[in-house]
Structures are given as C-alpha cells and as structure tokens.
Amino acid sequence: MTGYGRDDDALAALTPALREGYFAGQTVLITGAGSGLGRGLAHWAARLGANVVLCGRKVDRLEDTAAAIGRYNAQVLVHPLTIRDPEAVQDLFSAVAARFGCADIVINNAGGQFPSAAIDIPPKGWHAVIDTNLGGTWHMMQEAARRWRDAGRGGSIVNVVAVTGRGMPGVAHTAAARAGVIALSKTVAIEWAPLGIRINCVAPGLISTTGMNVYDPRAVRAMTRTNVMQRFGQIEEIADTVCFVGGNASQFMTGEVVHVDGGNQIWGDQWTIDKPDYFKVDSIDD
Ligand SMILES: CCCCCCCCCCC/C=C/C(=O)SCCNC(=O)CCNC(=O)[C@H](O)C(C)(C)COP(=O)(O)OP(=O)(O)OC[C@H]1O[C@@H](n2cnc3c(N)ncnc32)[C@H](O)[C@@H]1OP(=O)(O)O
Ligand SMILES: NC(=O)C1=CN([C@@H]2O[C@H](COP(=O)(O)OP(=O)(O)OC[C@H]3O[C@@H](n4cnc5c(N)ncnc54)[C@H](OP(=O)(O)O)[C@@H]3O)[C@@H](O)[C@H]2O)C=CC1
Image 1 (cartoon, helix red, strand yellow):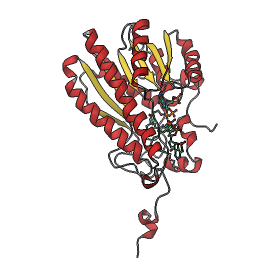
Image 2 (cartoon, rainbow, N blue to C red):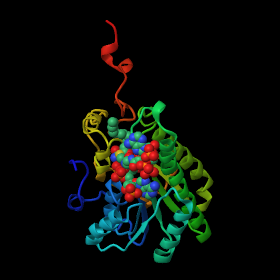
Image 3 (cartoon, rainbow, N blue to C red):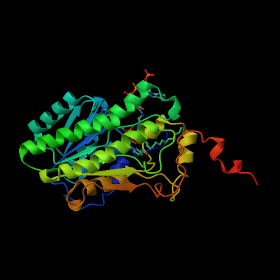
Image 4 (cartoon, protein in one colour):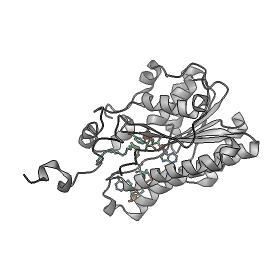
C-alpha cells in the first residue's frame, strides 16, 4: 500500500465544508462505498446527519466502512451488489425501502477502468468498463427514478464521472462510458424534472485515493503534473462538492457537470499511457 488516499482517522480529523445537520433526516445511498472516494463520501454523509446506505461488490470492505463511520452514530445499511445486474439493483432499492423508506440522494460513485491503448482493448475489457460505468450507473438512475415516481416524490442523483471534454487517451472505454453518463444525465434531467428529480454530475480530476494503487506508481506520480495546480486532488475536495450538489444547497441545479480537477479540463496532458513520440515537444524540428 502506497501513500495514496486518506485513512479513516485522517478523514475523521477533517471538517466538511457544509453545515452540521445538512443531511439530517435524509437517506444517502453511495455506491463504491468500500474504498476511496466512496468511503470518504460515507464519512461525509454520516457526519452531515444522513442515514447511509453502503454498496459495492465486496462485503468486507463495506462492513469496514460501516465500522469506521460508526463513530458518528449514523444509521447504516450495508448492501453488497454489482450494479451491473439490474435485478440486484431492484433488490437494493427494496432493501433501502424496507429499512429507511426511500433514498433521498443517490450517489453513483462505483466504477473504474484499466489503462490500455484503445486499439488493444479486448472485447471483454471493453464490456466490463462500459457495463460497469455506463450500464451500472444507468440501472441505478432508472431504478431510483422509478421508486421516486411510484412514491409520488422527487429525489437527487449525483453521478461521479471523469473529465472527458478533451478526450482521455489511454482510457477510451471509460471516456466513452463517462461521456455517455453525462449525456444521459442531461437528458433525464429534462425528462424527470416534472417528477421533481434532479440529476447532476461531478467530474473529478486526478484524486489521491487507493484506487491509484492499480496503476504504475511512476505514471501516477507524473499525472500530478497534468493540471494547473500541479497536485492531486483530495477526497474531501470531492466529498464537499458531491454533498453540495446532492443536497438542498444546490436545489436550483440540474443537468450540470461540476469539474473538480485543478483545471485539468483547460490545461494539462491527458495521457494515461506512454505518450507516443509524435506528441512529444522534442519531436518538433528546429
Ligand atoms: C499507466 C497510466 C496510469 C495513469 C493513472 C491515471 C488514470 C486516469 C484515468 C482517469 C481518471 C480516473 C481515475 C480512476 O478512476 S482511479 C481508480 C478507479 N478504480 C479502478 O479503476 C479500479 C480498477 N479497475 C478495475 O477493477 C477494472 O478495470 C474494471 C473496472 C473493468 C473491473 O471490472 P471486472 O471486475 O468485471 O473486470 P475483470 O477484472 O474481471 O476484467 C474483465 C476484463 O477486462 C480486461 N481487463 C481488466 N483489467 C485489465 C488490465 N489491467 N489490463 C488489461 N485488461 C484488463 C480483461 O479483458 C478482463 O478479462 P480477462 O481477465 O478474462 O482477461
Ligand atoms: N481517483 C480518481 O482520480 C478518479 C476517480 N474517478 C471515479 O471515481 C469513482 C471512485 O474512484 P476511486 O475511489 O478513486 O477508486 P476505487 O477503485 O477505490 O473505487 C471504485 C469503487 O467502485 C466499486 N465497484 C466497482 N465495480 C463495481 C460494481 N460492478 N458494482 C458495485 N461496485 C463496484 C468498487 O468496490 P468493489 O470492488 O467492492 O465492488 C470500489 O469501491 C470511480 O468511478 C472512479 O473511476 C473519476 C475520476 C478520477
């Protein structure tokens, strides 16, 4: 384990930007809550007064998050599933209904990818990334909306995506999936407005989480040079934004994509695999 991310004690020592009680009486569902940003979001939601639903595939990691946020005395439901299975997603929302009534805020944070030149991505790898990031997020969005519609009430969805605007060489599958989520979010922000449902996206730049451990450490160190601020973002910087966007402080926002990326959408290298000589400044003739 390298130094990426923040452990539970470090998260507990920080203070959310939003006021105490911001989520009081509300239920916040978080996917990918066993690690990284999702775990940070679980701390933030619990500290802001929410009932918290923790989802992901690995139950041990979810139980660990539940134990860690026990210090805030929140009501917590652990529900393992893969978001790629629409029936499992329906079961999740039934379990939430049985325990808390309805979720108020759904944070679709689960996802990931692997670095590969687009030309080399195998079909199985393509489908794994698309089915998780686009398909899984969609199953969660649609089921949340159906439950809110059937209950005659609204709700709020936050989709954690990525900075796709300039392309993402080295992770084309995730660029396609996340751009799909953004387009979907803008579309249903319109269709579901009459239902009182808001949908927004948060696009993190490179954030220091344990998720970085799956990448080559040298490459990840170099990635800190790829934004205007020349550093990693931190979990709390994303958690503050997601909680703002998910909760009532942003109630006049929908269909929005909030970039929290140190300026990476306007400047900085995008390469997540070795950059071809073609793009290197040294390759320019005098
Ligand atoms: C070298 C440059 C490093 C730069 C680092 C920065 C990257 C910036 C990207 C943009 C910013 C986003 C950052 C993040 O998201 S941080 C971390 C988030 N977490 C993860 O990405 C988790 C790790 N990823 C995964 O778990 C998987 O990629 C996946 C999401 C697909 C998991 O799905 P699943 O569990 O179903 O997949 P499998 O492991 O069973 O694999 C299915 C097939 O996918 C192909 N595959 C999977 N991993 C790799 C790999 N490392 N290399 C090549 N191919 C891979 C493969 O076909 C698998 O099938 P087989 O196992 O049968 O071969
Ligand atoms: N860190 C960064 O720099 C950036 C991250 N992001 C995105 O933010 C999100 C969180 O990333 P981060 O915390 O860094 O990385 P992590 O790898 O720590 O988090 C990904 C989480 O997704 C869960 N997950 C993956 N597949 C599924 C599935 N099929 N069903 C349910 N849960 C699943 C994993 O849990 P489990 O394995 O137990 O299922 C894990 O907890 C991801 O979507 C990521 O791509 C976007 C931009 C930048």
